[in-house]
Image (cartoon, rainbow, N blue to C red; front, side, top):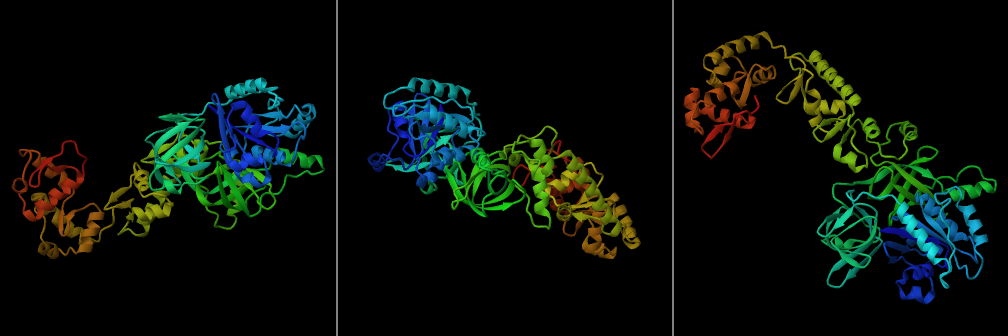
Length: 596
């Protein structure tokens, strides 16, 4: 299926032409048929081509934008007896600003006047726009003259359109919403790409709704792939809140964004016409307050100019956006429009002096084409799912750290900084050289603490009790002598943890025990219970020789220890994954588990 929207001045025969092509009535309202004036969107079809009929009157341009926004192709209509008019130009500006490059020009009412003059003027107006050179059949909807040629052109257009990806994430903009008796909320929309199935869960402005039923071209369907016109019967708590402009998307495939950086471009037709009358520069970008039109949505927006043709847009509500998306900014006061190409859906904050100028310089090299390598290089670190949701494929050169992807150059630089930071800490505080992982994360400005461990791997840094260190702490002579005594005692009886009285007798206070553990001289398995390094390996070796599973009493006897030590030691082994419970009273050694 292909979906084509009409465009053109009021009363130039758009709806009449669709009646002749399809045999269907595009005007849905009685008032529209009574006044002979299209007010809202109409939907008709013939064969595998669906049409969205838009109003041509200037008062209903917002409705026109809702219809033309999501479609891939347009049929611009000009009446032979009236030629190019004000709304024809405004509609062309909108189509051009939205970046629509597929379509046709139709000269109608050829029974009232010859088409040559209107066609020549229209060709001139289309020069420099995305519709320059499109096919231009001339027709009379009343007599049927030219309709066979128009149908042939439509078939050729459908064959020339790019094939969308049926596996792509779904994003549909509701352009009509109504309640069907006994079925609830129904939203109609143009499905550009992806596939919608009965039973799917979609997000409606972030809230889950379920697809209860599907229709396309008046026929019930189990699934529909884009491009297509669809009517989606929805259920769920959020279904009643759906309105025109509500966006339905596949969960976890889109990034909701309220702040984006864009490249602005005035419509080629308007700029070219201004140049013909002595103008040389494009019209100034929109005022600070404008309306962002995308799909069927119209969202108030604040515009902050950055460069000559770039700006930061802050939307009044979040929309699911991707790099390369085309939208339209409209100044309601002047009625001027600008095309907007999304360059960045997660732009950096502009807080520091000079940040806006630096950002404008950076945006100069961005073209709005999703590029995973460039995005990763620019960001340094990004979650894989987020990069894909931006519309960019993860590059093969990316380094993976869990859910994160890293640019190799940035990763090497971060690893060097990590070693410098931890080494400097060791030099400044030789008695307490370790840094907590959170302190390291903040020092390196990392977005996630899990990245600290990934960066530290292979650097030679040690980690004890969650602290990274470049060197073992220098222990005071008093503490070193006490530890030598305690180590000798534990060598003779590895699981005879010293009592509180024995620790006090050796002069080992809680702070001394923490310093000894940081230095790797002791292992604290519970408050007040310390053993020598390697105690877990020794214990597992002994416990593995027992009949499996074993009780805590059997473990205590095999270890030649006490219940005070055995219970926390077994719990310590459980945490390490060296043992596991089989029942409340039994455990077994886990073969092949990681070492301490």
